Length: 389
Image (cartoon, rainbow, N blue to C red; front, side, top):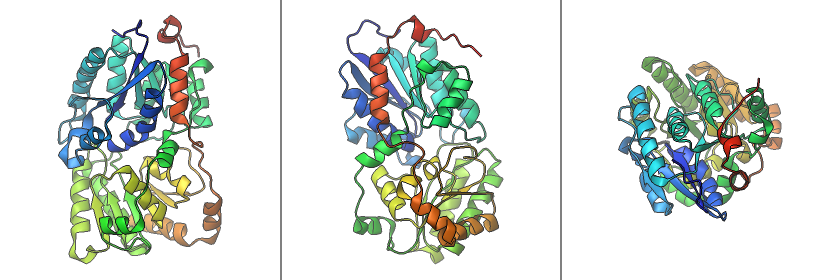
């Protein structure tokens, strides 16, 4: 059970993926710097898988407090992995005597972590609740976490209103913005020479940044959708850096397809493929790319800060609030190519791009979370949820 009488509250922060960890680092720092709070990561999921970059090494190198648990199989088996995750998060939260659990977003493993915390009576704080991104199961998982969470930290005003319409009282909702803005401000980017050496071509020449995850379709369809995007990028831009997809059903086939496509002799010196990429290099590429294509949330949330034209492919991010830098399109080489040509050459769009603002806030999300945690009593009012509709 949580350590209610401790003078310093232990705040466990769940992380399963490389992107999620990057977003949560400023939250960790802000919490750990706040008197009365002590932060510790619980690192699970794809952090421990070699095929996804073994990013637990990055966490260890950062020198943060971390409790490591192994939850994901390789290849992934979603049902068994989530059952394993509930059990192992329960053990970690108990051993840490956690008072709070912080989770972000809509991944199935975050629902497992929140389920374990609910069973133990650990208070839950949820970042990026209230978003809408109707992937195969994203909205259902995110909204389920919302109903378990005790404090909500939505990234936009629209998301905050959506949480309120779900029956959550206003005192539980803290508009924090996205921690992605904090990450960008705190993360140094490599210079051009270092980026050129890393990707193997001159980043002063136009290139695309491609991140396309599985979106709940059969494996053959996912592979077809991805290859269509890659062929469209090749036809319209010629150079690209491709980042591998996350640990979702169907991702194994996508990694294999990317490796074969990028590894073709005709693309050497013009294409680069990374299974995982450190945050600073990723932001450096975003700052220099001519266009971003795929279906990553970073193409919606972070890209506006760089005024990076983004082609959002397929339904994975449909419904998520986007700025004026985003062009949405369907799957297929022709649709993606048309969107890329518009993103790079349409004068009206380029004028809009030059003026776009990030609808996900101006930063300070980590500090907002820390303030809310230290000010909120761990009492019956918080922990026993009574919801009116």
